[in-house]
Length: 255
Image 1 (cartoon, rainbow, N blue to C red):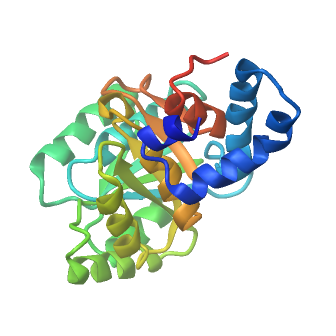
Image 2 (image 1 turned 135 degrees about the vertical axis):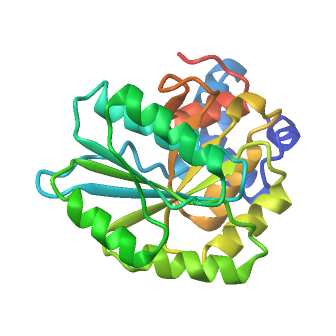
């Protein structure tokens, strides 16, 4: 089992922690199939997940996605907007700060029209404050930020000021599951300058291994929020769970 976890690039410390959780059953001679099921359950002992965005009874929940360019932040915002506005009947507003990429704004405009969800552009902290006040009656406000290189400290500092200008913004760091472990570690370390509250992993359908997700959560302790698995809106997004991650790592089908 250790070799199987290692082949998925799960870190040594995490492997040790997982195997320690099933060691008593192994010492009692439990069969391999039963031990594998225990190993799936053991992931819940080391992996922290936040569960879905929960709407408040008073005031909007405000979520911002941040992360490197090309990880799928804009599509993720559209998926969440559709999930809550269309599937749950919540009052949703979308905000974009990305006035650099015309395509990103146009993409959200298209979804905005389809879902009948308002879209605002707020490129500065002052504009964001005005937009949030305007949509104070909403249940959920989703903010799409422009991609930033983790090496661009100046741009990250600007984004930090932007996100901290309004209280109550929950910041989700979006990372592609195709990112190599060392690069992922650097991304999380650099983006930790921001008020990160959750990790959100995209492009699981394009990844060949999933151990790096385990490592990122265990190493940095930010809980996992959502996994995205394709381009379809809103179908290709699901709430992250320790069991789902275990099944991905161990190549098990959901039971």
